[in-house]
Amino acid sequence: MVTLQQALRDGATEDFWQSLKAELLALEPGILPLQQGVTQGGYADASNLEMTLLDKSETSQQIIAKVGLFYGEIIAGCSCGDDPVVDSV
Image 1 (cartoon, rainbow, N blue to C red):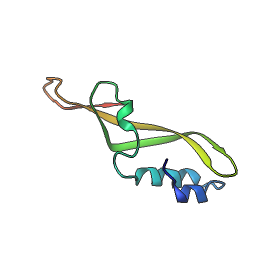
Image 2 (image 1 turned 45 degrees about the horizontal axis):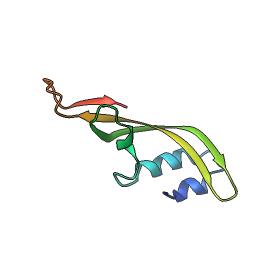
Image 3 (image 1 turned 30 degrees about the vertical axis):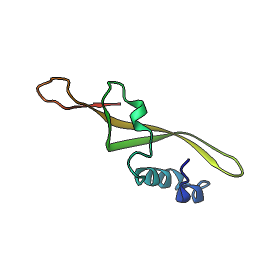
Image 4 (image 1 turned 30 degrees about the horizontal axis):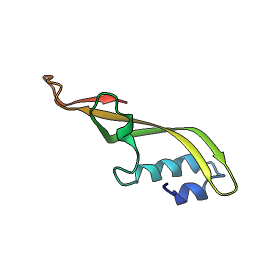
């Protein structure tokens, strides 16, 4: 589990979403499970990652955020004239 310190500090403020988004975008490649969401057997492409906050709940010890991620999928070897193709997930 990843701890996002700034988002945690901003949890009760209007800055929460911006802090969360910035910290998620700053994570090392491979931390987010993007490959699990590919649908065509290709490779996750996070070069143009977008996200939206779907839900947020809090306990006395943590903030739980449900985030929707939007990214591309590189489908290599499809024998297309413009191979590889990026398909939005």
